[in-house]
Length: 393
Image (cartoon, rainbow, N blue to C red; front, side):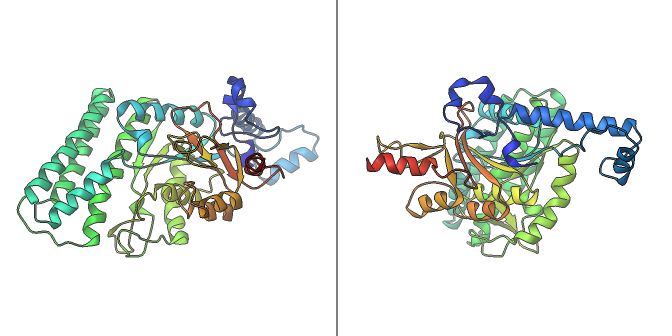
């Protein structure tokens, strides 16, 4: 299925969005996708009633006998969602984001990539620095505070007793792993590898909590640690992924879950060397992780959910002339980034362009807003071109 047929339900529900969408455009909120998925399932049912396996030569044979058959069902679109740390800060925001996933999971296969909650990575790196400075007691106290914070988020999710107890056990186990890295008295070797091991805990806690928030929202979900399949070099704190090997490993883990209508909640930011040592892809690399996971599952679209309405011509907090850009080609987005604009992680767009995957930048807290679409150019008068013309005038 073309990514342009994936979603516009919010357009039908919110007329205000219509003016922002050029004729023929489909934003990632499509009631059309719901209808397509239903038609596909209906078509499959009709084939099965006739004793036919969809996609087999039996279909042609029946057609040759004069049977009127529906078209073979199209696969459900695959969407990759990446949620940033601001979007996941606390139980309320996690449940809100889970509601967005629930909506799209009705008509699509969805894989989610999560950042650590806002501020978590900074706290973990500060703990590593305290260990380097031999301030072990202080580091230990900070680590225990980090664990208490995540336990408080668990309590606020309002889970049923069974789910709460299971997740509490998982967080306690993960917490013991963290505290093992932060001894109260022993000297710890100061290495980049230490910083990566500690920094990885933010996403690992976040994935477990967000998977529980999805379950609370009636979405089947499981946390997946990206270090199980994102294979990297051993340049700690700025590791480079080996994409083809990562894709082979990742598909073995993620595709069966998607086929079973289970949402994988994958940790962003982290990978592992071939011998299993935790690495990170560099600060602010979760967008890149989102693109990697989207590449692994052959997603039709990657949606970066963040706390802004999309990509602007300039920083809207600094310039009254800043304009929201609704449509960009890969080249235009790259040009903006090269000019210093805060667009996306620099490795996202080349990977998306390689597979012609559409990328959206959207506001978690204003899901009715269309956001910015980045993809193949389908019109000569793009929003960036119009903005440049208006600026010149």
